[in-house]
Length: 464
Image (cartoon, rainbow, N blue to C red):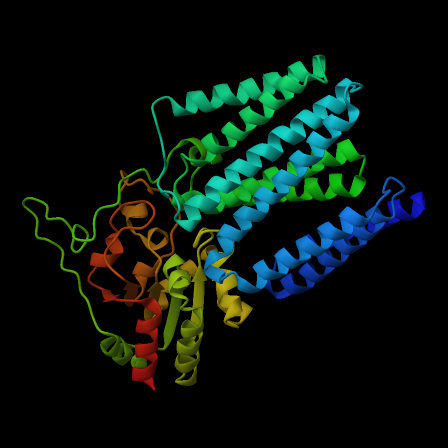
């Protein structure tokens, strides 16, 4: 039976690696999910056959309850709330690893060797940090606490001190294991560290935070695999941990920022102005106030009728308005009149990695029309219309024209190079970065104010 379990673990690990490979492309993502799910089922079955399992009542109860909760979340959660759900799931992963470490500490006390204590300490530390950090990310994304950075003087120094204190506690436990009081102090410090690490991070950086917390949950799972001597848990945890780190680095590169700047820079700390203050650009002494050109959906439809090429730029505003299906219908109408339609997807658009891809895939937008920033930017100059739907900072020309801008140097989508730019927004309010968007006042830009879904439906009706 032991050999069968190890072979099953090996096949499960191979399935995870293969599934991850297929997930790198939208065309094969469904196949990748199926392969990974099959590997997970195989790993679970093999684990249940292990000789250490002496009672299946609680295990089966957990499977039933967990499956019911998972099915309910999968069917009831809106796509706009997917980032919050991912944050919660990261937290649950951290919690499960921390519980494994705590149970091992309880079971092995007082006869804990140094290696076992080190793996238990690391598992509990990272798992608890993941739990509380993910909880703060969820609260920010859900709007239950401010999405702006929460900062105080010497915060980074305090965080570093807390981090080194937590490592010191783990080292002390390795030297003097089975000390329950010190172990509980470690849990408390890790709980506090997770909160402190995430509260100074602004909403614009949430995609990176979610990816990083996912990496933490994988590292915690791998550490718990050493506690349980479970090879498949070590491999799968290492895969999740490394994939999360790589994805975080890729998104930081897309924003032209370092990971340390995301974690410690308190980006987006600028206070967002009131609705009245953002109704129009602020006048500058000695300069003429740029005029905002606004239009109606009917006027937009007249321009669309003459367009030969359109690039749609989705942003979080599209997700909030649940406009993805309306966008697909508009694209279908345009294609029937002979217009070429493409979608430009910025790597950090939305609030989690791949957020826009998931939403548009839900509306059955063909994968080949979803084009990454680097591959589509050169097409904007030859495009008749760029339709920007709820996107803001990722199309702000200020990243290229203003060296003093907070987003200076950040790669953006070159929507401003199109012959005509149409921006669907509720107001002139800045995006997550808290700065005005130069695109909104350019002479080739038409602002169409209102709910994105309602506006697109009106444009579609006028085209019909």
